[in-house]
Image 1 (tube, rainbow, N blue to C red):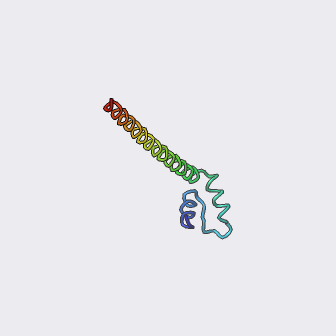
Image 2: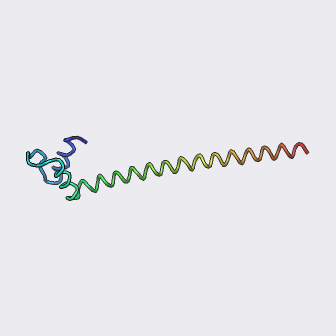
Image 3: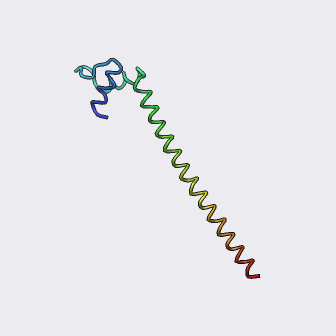
Length: 86
């Protein structure tokens, strides 16, 4: 995300990042308020964030199921042992 990214983004919005009197801060402000690059960056951020959240929930779900299955099979083994002793 160096200066080349700003140049590409500014050219999409109709601004010239090579002008001397344009600071990076005002350029970013123009890009975000112009709406072309800002919404894409925000959308990508939320897409990645919710993707990671979904992966984390899936990971917890998977291991919760594995733990529950292990507990159930352990219970069944103990019950079978208890029945066989009688």
